[in-house]
Length: 200
Image (cartoon, rainbow, N blue to C red):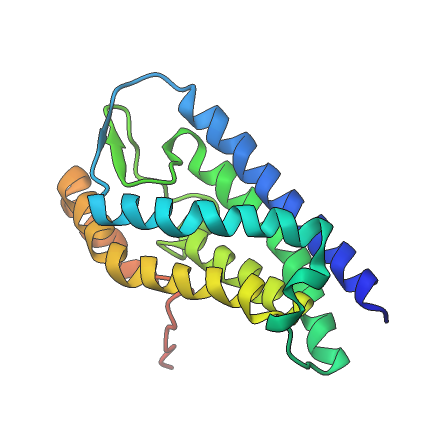
């Protein structure tokens, strides 16, 4: 397979994933009700300092991938195809997550007056399936592109966000929903379904 093929797959997966997120973000932002935002200033600054330059570099990469050949590394063909599988799988998964979230979706920590505790769809088993799907998507991008800058930087950034944000996110949900959320935490896993041992 040529590099052009893998590049076109990357463009398709990345553009499709981004478009899906934009559509659902627009729908959620149009819902009624005032929002109380709880995003720390550190995260906002990091998004601006890292996110904007990286998105600009992604646009350059889409049209001129050779400019980023300095960050390329060798991967076996099976790994590149695994990346394609992960990338394509992330598309229906992100739709599933977004549909379950509905108007509760936001890219920043917040609560709305009509905020509801979502336990349908993937949230029936996992508390943070959005992060799970993002990891799948970005891991796919890393393998498809075989480029540590294009695939590795956003993956590392997501890991940093999860480490620094997850505790605040779950604390916010406990403040909003109280015992209902604490009970929900006991029956679900954070990123993957909770493993249950069945005793005979």
